[in-house]
Image (cartoon, rainbow, N blue to C red):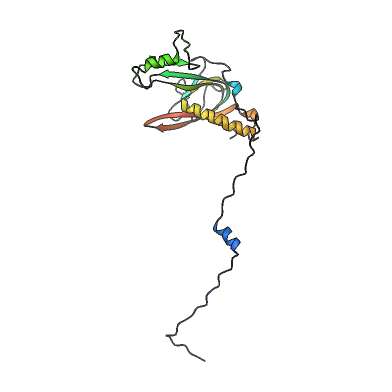
Length: 229
């Protein structure tokens, strides 16, 4: 029997590392997420913008119908009653309205005028939009013409109770809301063409109030969303 001295080094056995094939090791080292499936491009003519048949179907004059508008992060009716953050309407018609004004909050409100074609005014004066803009810019250099949409629909639901349910209502979309509206039309047309959305349901749309801030100003944008998407 051989006795080891305390000064002799103690050698511990070393566990062998498992042998991993090179291909497996590479797979473990880099795990890429699965790519989404490639969608087929819709055939020419199969992707039609929705609501083309609703454009200018009929134009309601101001005050003819109950009006819904953007509040402070919500939607309100013409009596300032809170309808909540969203409403659902069955869209019946929409049309363009151009608001021509001095572009300055300090300017008199009667300088603001309206046009449906951005060329002439329907007030019998014979003035044209370009002529009026030139006249305004003499004193108001930020004068401009901005595109709005007037939307008419049947109110189907709202986050908070409304006396206008099942009635025709009217609301105005600001320029930023118009941009969201047109982008949504394209997205929905694509999804209809791909078979992801039933075209029979696209007339029912949810409109949501979204607070927006930019360049020191705050407002509420109205954003359309399908009840299916």
